[in-house]
Length: 229
Image 1 (cartoon, rainbow, N blue to C red):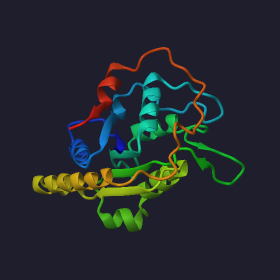
Image 2: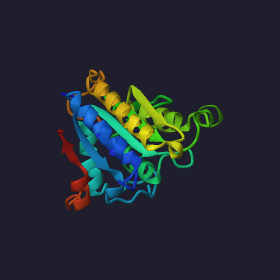
Image 3: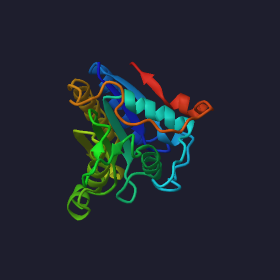
Image 4: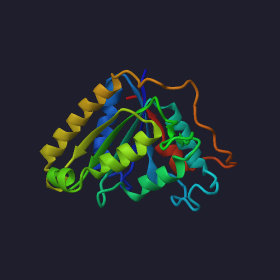
């Protein structure tokens, strides 16, 4: 049974993004998959990478929990709004802190590293108010390039599929409901795809030397839930 992890990158859970996340969850379960959800804004962690990669910054308990969830997943599903042609700060901070050398990627002498998250696919579901032509031709699809290629693909995640909603502020209720139905169908198909090849048994990245003595926060425990609907 395929297993997905939905990483929700909006601080407000009473939004159209949340409706889309719920629609994806329903569709993935209908397709025969198991899906967990992680609300990034509910996690208790410092989003600032204080010393870059020069010094170790111990992972907080919530990040350790998130790391375990990623290691269990066959597919990572990212749901977030687009702010200033980029991901919300909570998404960027989560990636900065967790997708570290030795776990997400490793340099082995070449110009580009070996991606240690290989064997996993991704779905990037993003919303924006900009029209498609502005995002595509003027901005050159920044989420596709910076987040998809330069982040997820850099870490070995392939293939990466995109569902991008444009001009969201002009969508009426009928259009929003239609998008939710469409996202359900996309999720059902995702659940029926074969897992990406190259997945290691156990995890291939080196574990951080960091340890945590405290338990994950209550908010994180509530936000990471197995959804078997």
